[in-house]
Length: 171
Image (cartoon, rainbow, N blue to C red; front, side, top):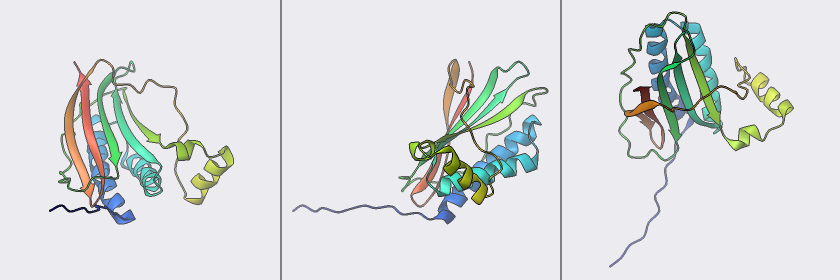
């Protein structure tokens, strides 16, 4: 006896928002611990990322903690998954990053080809129509994790949508 079947996963914008809220909690705790971002700054970044996620343009988000000389101290990478069915969603945590006077806390979003293939006027219209806080342009900064040690972090999921976190620190 054999059987066949199809397994499909669906999620809604509400599921995306729920996952992004977990990221928002992480980011807020990191910002407060490091003293490098205001609550307003965190909220504006999260609002933008939520829009990009809802439209399917977001592939990943990476937070970089840099010292005053621009050296990476900590990095957290969140990979977006639209096949997160069966994931157990964790609670935000492990965000007690060091206070870093004179440092910076970067946020880098990685976007889909569908986003980057839009013309400049199309991107500008999207940003304006949705009231985004930043144009989210390409960066020339080093966004690699070279010389860092990785460790598994939380998974945030709702129905089939999720973000998987990996932590990086200097070795």
